[in-house]
Image: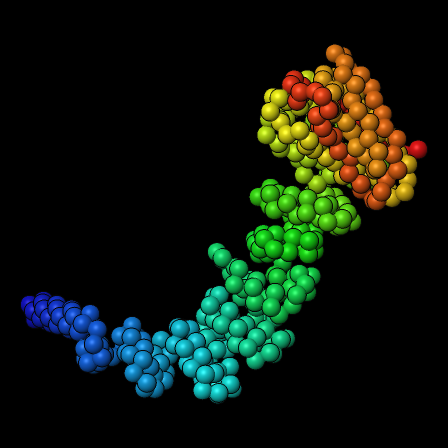
Length: 381
């Protein structure tokens, strides 16, 4: 029993000594590495030959001095079989040297050992440079499947490969809400009129977080005359079909404020107020509003060349305020109580807008006070 205890004690002492020696060795290597000169880094590698961080820096130094870093990088890849970084560097180096087969082999190996974004993105760029477009789209889609944060560089490259968003959607964008949403936001910055297929897909998820981007696309499509795509997105979001009617005739909930709902046009000196009991809409004029400005707009579900009758009820001031529809307009009457009004017009195009405008009458001061609206409807004649 005594001998066993003695042996265990000696073993513990030996282990502590080995650990102490190894700790000193690591400290020496780290001190050499921090000096940063090629000689010091080389000595750090001699002390700890399996430290890939030291070898990576030495490879950079060799490359900077015009040498060949490949042996060091290959040794790093051998030591760390799960690391993509040395394989990516070897692949890019082979491409620069014109060894395209070797470049592809190393980059594919990087994507095999590391299924994250960087290896896939690097492969997509490699195939784009080689104009191997089938492989490019395959790896771009694979990269976007695991992408995060800023995806703009990937979308930029996709736009260089294909000018239209529909092709990019089909070939590169995975069926993931976050990626589709990011692509829509990207397109809104420069090509909103081309983003309809992206918005149509995104609207099917009906995620409240996507509404700002979808509303912006809805408005852009309507302003550019793409009523069909706007209607599809609108219906995907669960709103009532806008065909042949005014959406939200009493300005009640849901107050979308975009698409086929009422657009409340913001102007200095003009304030919009939603009334709930009963539902109606009030517009306040401070007397400092522009002499001419649009107040309300809605793209209604009318058909081109058909005649319609627009009806409403209003109360309050009316001087200078008029409905515009098609090519005609009619002023509101100034009344203290709810007063009906109507306007017959021919739709210029499908989903033509109706709009309420203010224009200061000649010889009058700018309007002060408020006007209220409700029961705005349309029927085909």
